[in-house]
Image 1 (cartoon, rainbow, N blue to C red):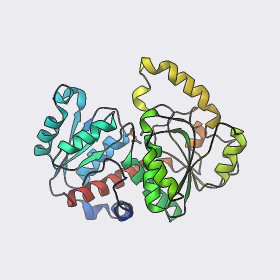
Image 2 (image 1 turned 120 degrees about the vertical axis):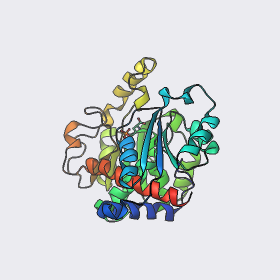
Image 3 (image 1 turned 90 degrees about the horizontal axis):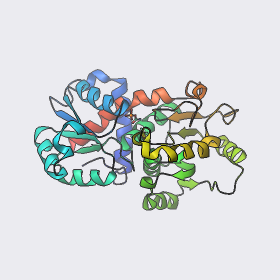
Image 4 (image 1 turned 45 degrees about the horizontal axis):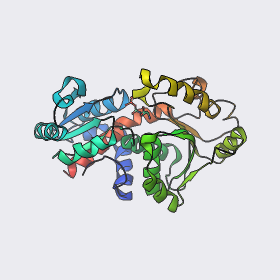
Length: 312
Ligand code: CP
Ligand code: NVA
């Protein structure tokens, strides 16, 4: 069993992972020796703070060992991906990887003989969504029937929220005038829409301000993420597109005016870009549960590792 996307994970897998995450947070001592010396390899093509720390520190706190590999300093960069994954599988018990392309994950997971966890690619971010469900359960006391509105560029995080939401009954409304080309997943969107758990606000013919205000007013959670994925931030070939997006997306910023009178919670997976998708004051707003979200990545990652190792 891998965690490449949440699509093949059952409702039970997801709900039990959330429950385990909450237990691990409450009783960390009980899990001190839970993995008895097992090793996790982190294989990262992109930068990371939360996912890397959650993996490294998580396995250590479970009694195991972490080994971090920066893709660029390995022979993954010049060899056959399948060969290198087989080699790595012989050294460690589980792999947490962050690849640029989803297609590489599929190839890597096919070759691996140990569980592979997707620590974010261009299409999905499943460990983020599982941590977020834990945070929603913790703060709202329920998942089923929760109304979550994602405002921003439809991306990897948005897809995983839809994939997780459709399994546990969270209604996801997306307000996204832009979709990352790599995040297009019509099969997922259609399946979630058929269940009545995914809606898209058509932004072409609306008054953005008033349409956003009414979506926000009906939501339990307002969620946003960066308008530009991390690998493009400093990419000179993306500079023009980045500027175009920043201008295009400004009316969709989460700020005090948009959230005036809103009584629900505010979420962001981080890293945040203050003054762009979210105003700095909103990051620190008392309705924001953003730092709880990032802390919960650790507890949730431990639950994911335990589940995958138990099924290996
Ligand atoms: N939210 C998240 O995945 O953060 P990192 O990119 O820092 O891991
Ligand atoms: N969607 C953003 C943030 C993920 C943590 C990205 O891929 O860079």
